[in-house]
Length: 118
Image (tube, rainbow, N blue to C red; front, side, top):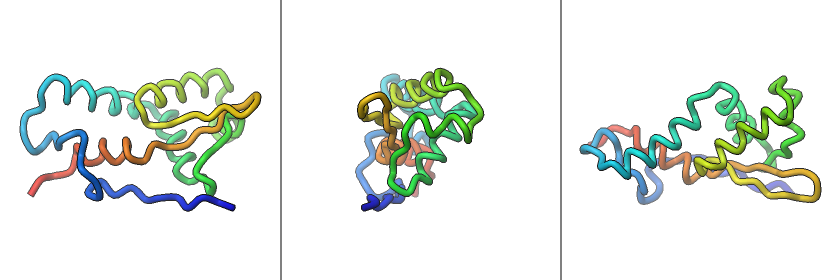
């Protein structure tokens, strides 16, 4: 049975990261946001996120990224590690393969940081 895919509503929960437009950020807040935004600043990683977001079951085996991205499996694993280190995806090893899913809360936090206030 397919898991329902939740939509991302940046206003739906308490923000862990304040809006960069609300007030000046302190150094730790800026560093936390920069980790996430840096991970997003690559076309391959953005495509990985879009494929994960569109997955009917909410997760994708690492082996399923090779063909649509036209990249080698080691290259895809490198990009997934960057996304994972930034907290944007989670991997679940099942035998030989790792299945990835989005961390929708983390993505919503980054989106909330760019929301205008007021």
